[in-house]
Image 1: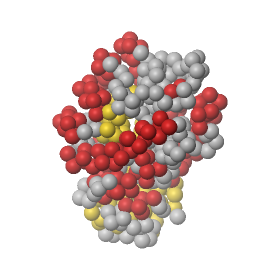
Image 2: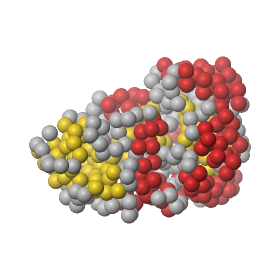
Image 3: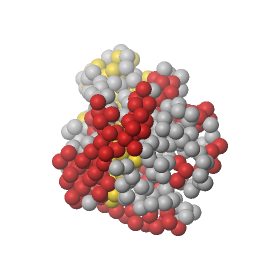
Image 4: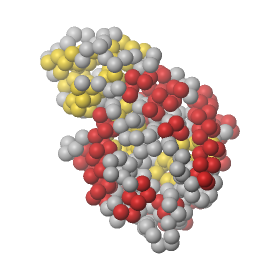
Length: 403
């Protein structure tokens, strides 16, 4: 048995720090909270223990060292992408994020679900990284925001993707695309419902898939017990996504009060990724992209607070590498800056994430749960920025960081 001793620990449900922080660990589980130390004692000093944080929107196969922007879309083969993801995974874990959803490849892979393979390697202990809930390939129509040819306005027949790789049109094709992801290990489905900031053509809020196609995607996923997450910005597109039964809206920058109320009534989740509006550099982007950012980013900074106040269920997501891998805590800082209380933000990064992915074995420092534990040098309820300075990381009872 191992006992962790610290100045305090966070009770995420109560929103308070319990002092001192005593956790007893056996194997990969927490077996005791508070009370006397037993077995080997690891005194972490004047830090606060938190549950491992969760990022509900990352793309570990994109960004990171050696990525060369748009040219990587056509120059990097699947093997190189996985090797680059090893570093991204390590940085994410060492930043205190022990569980992530990898939300949708939109690169040429030959049909391989690289995030599924990455997660298997991490679970086997071959490489360091967070627990991954993989979505496989993002499903998008031809010319949709997550059609990678849109980002550079590639000529016809450059970087053609298959149905298996997520480019799917019409009910039959979207059903096949969903079935393929499930067959090869996806644990949720990621789709594109509206436009976005970084695709060169079309309004960012315009709905891409028809209602019939959306219902078909949801039907296929839900019958197999999988949730559907949807890249969606526009208020009208979000309304159609909610009506189709989509479980989670990614971004939702342009949602209005009516849309927010529909989400609340339906129990639809929001992963707002608001921090990227502070960090994304569009200074060298084409004029049409700058115009989109100028329209959307200010709205993104206010819509998330309106959603929180209305009671919409919110989980933390960064859209990394839109926020650099390893800087995931910037999203927590951004959410507090928007006006959401720190205790609510910490719940969004822990227990809410666990609820969203449908697990009960993590998200709290409680007996019987996985020993996914981090430590920060101060009280995050008083200063959320301490989550940027993680001093200790344990995942499944194994220590990965101890400063």
